[in-house]
Image (tube, rainbow over all chains, first blue to last red; front, side, top):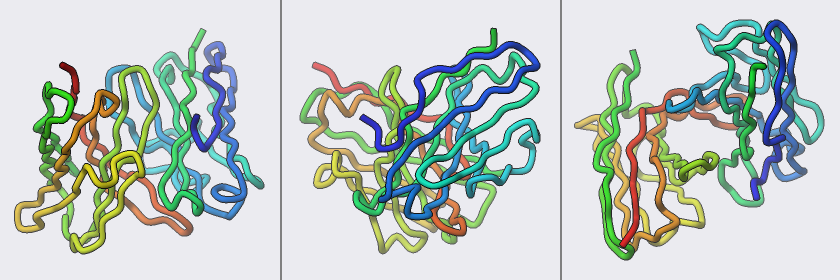
Length: 111
Length: 121
């Protein structure tokens, strides 16, 4: 059971918009700790997608955006493309566990 | 260009030991905390351990505390993970990750390609 809760799967057609939620608690996201997102393409290592809730590293398309409110965060992907099919993970810090924590991951399927 | 290259994975029996290495390049290694993150087959990501840039401060997940030891050699730009008393549930791909500090929390800025550790009799 992951500390941060994500839906196991989401799907969308090419060109559509999808969102992936990441729900935490008062000891992590709700305490103001940043949320970060990673993309893991099949058979590859994770890659940083969003850091500090809503910032994109250089090279990440602006189709990807992040937001945070209260004890939850969201990753939005607009203009869905076939190459976006991957697993997406959120990550934050938990003050009760005193360690970094991940969501369980969400598999995005492009229909 | 930042590069992280793990090595040392393999098949080991329960109760055995293994030492993972991560060779880093493309950044000032001693200026950055480094982490190990693992991923069991078909499962999600799990943070394992972290070490400060100087190597003085180390941190562990409860699941590995007392069995794993993280260390680094800044003269060799290398990160290590000594894994003892290995269990079947330690089977995973182990990733080396460069840490970055944000406004309110830290994250994994770059990742290696991973090395597979299989614990089985």
